Each structure stands twice: as structure tokens, then as C-alpha cells.
Amino acid sequence: MFGRKEETPKNQSIQVLNSIAVGTIIEGNVRTEGDLRVDGKVIGNIICKGRLVSGPSSEILGDILCVNGNLEGMCRGNIQVSEVLKVAKSANIDGIISTKKLTVEEGAVMQAKINMSNSSGNPVVVQKTNIPPTKS
Image 1 (tube, rainbow, N blue to C red):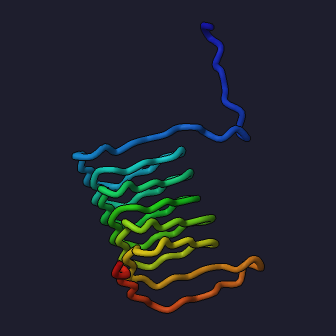
Image 2 (cartoon, rainbow, N blue to C red):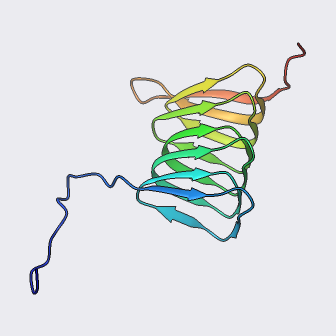
């Protein structure tokens, strides 16, 4: 107990969920070792070493760097996801997207240049697109 320091093994991932709630505005960069959910507004860059989830009411005005991402809100900036990016139908994205795998639900609004790597690691570039929501 006293004088003895407990250490977390280096190979154990940090299981932390951080949340930026509706009505919260953060001006400045956000960096986390765990997962992050944004339902408020972030004016600055986000570096997330886990999963980033942006809720439907979220606004992110800055660049995003994360391992996995689920975007449902508004993002203005470059998005770099090392694994899988899922874009929901409620999302509105403007920027350059770089990811290994991308899923986009019908109805999502995207004005983006998309860079994807295939299984061999070679980049596959999809030129700038403007995908408006479909009319039901």
C-alpha cells in the first residue's frame, strides 16, 4: 500500500470512455488515450488513441486523428482513421478523409477527398466528391 507503486502492464490497453456532452463547447485541442464520445462542440483538433464517436448533435471544427471512428454529426477538417471509419446518414463532412476501410450510410452529406489503403497498403485515391442526401 505505502511506498509501493502499482504499475499497469504496458500491453494492457486503457479502457477509458471520455464524453463531451450536449451544450459543452471546447476551444482547443483534445487528446485522449482511450475512447471519446462527442455530443457537444469542439473547436480544435482531436487525437484519440481509441474509438471516436461523434453524436448527431456534435460539431467538430478541426482535424481528427483516431484508430476507429463513428461519425454522426458535423465535421469540418481533415479526418485520419487508421482502421475503420463509419459515416452515419446524419453526418455532414467537409475535408480530406484517410482510412483503411470506409462505410457510408445512404443520406450522409460528404464533400471530401477520400484516400484509402487497400490490403497491400497501397493507397487508393477517390477524388473529391459532393454527395448530397437522396430524396425519399
